[in-house]
Length: 451
Image (cartoon, rainbow, N blue to C red; front, top):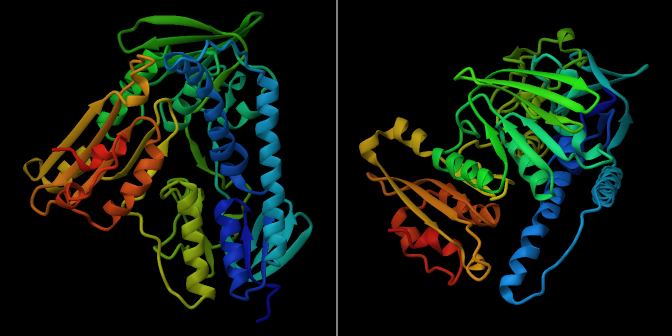
């Protein structure tokens, strides 16, 4: 049977664009549909604009530290509108780059919301196209919890559209998105209160990372209300009133000047996708796929956050390229989900790769695990006399001496763990870490000097 396309991709985020371009490079005729800006969550509402705001939030501490090195004090005020406009201008620039990359790859772009009509047909508005293979890469969307008054809260996507800086921001949720924005806004000068249901932030991460970041956030002036059992939001003439009840039945009402940021997670963006018109199966709200990203409908595949495997941009890109390599490049391969490094752009920054201490203990047994830790004040903070700490941690299997996990909280954690991740991915042993000469003086050398 003849089709309009060899491959049609629904969703032009990082995973979708990477797949489309790789498939086209192999000679496939490819189309892609997107109803929003090109680049998906990462470019438009996540990694890129958020990281730019992280950089902006660090300048006050740099100004303060400079006086310890002999520089005169700096008095500077943030122009929120100038900063947020510059951030969004950079996003617009990147949108143009993505368009040019697709054009240069001869991928045909359809502007509109796409839906599956059947196993080989996609509708974009009133137009229909057919394809031999269809890839779904629609990503995720923020979810607002069922809380009275939640309609008055904005999501993490909306923070980039605020025309004025919140004087007092209340953040709901202790996942990485929530705490990153809490740290950003605090660094930019807002008062910040973080409300979480658990005792500690970052459920699922290594406990030492969780404790270290939470302690640092509180030390930097972020108020954390934990063990929340009930919450309601009401709007008044003076702003938003957030009423919080904690596990000990203590109740408190907090006044936020204009906005309460809901950062309580994301879910696959499957609404209106037309999945019901195919044999594609949904499991736990996500598209179910096998190791080759194939759905229950043999010619329909899915990658990225809509499959809810590991929701990271580089993972979605790798999944998509593996699909294209397999089906159009003659190089069958799958994505490996072991030892995927990740970073949390809080202040202080954190990064991790491999197993947490708890995961390693559960897998190998407590008597087979040895943990190495180092906690210190980096040299940068000695002259300013800032009470900032860096934590580094290695989790080692005593039977094999293999490093099972590496974790860090501190400046440049993401940059440092990226290199360490190569060693962990290759199965390096603690003895091989120890045999590596450290770069002195640096924080990174601690990873090869811990005893």
